[in-house]
Length: 75
Image 1: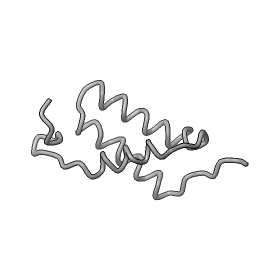
Image 2 (image 1 turned 180 degrees about the vertical axis):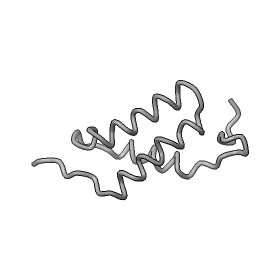
Image 3 (image 1 turned 90 degrees about the vertical axis):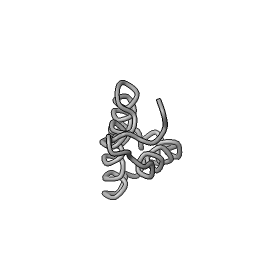
Image 4 (image 1 turned 180 degrees about the horizontal axis):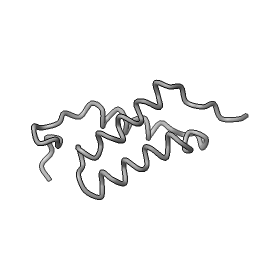
């Protein structure tokens, strides 16, 4: 069974989350998460088991941003 490529909508959600995660989590954590999401879009879907990644995408896209561009969680 060969992997089915992601549709355009899924790819755009991953890219939007990859951009937004650097604002939610500035610094190295956001950078690593951003790269992971972009890599998943490119290659990871072939590995299957994308439930965790898509839960991360949902979290990132639903988390509110403060005026300074970060989420409401105190660091």
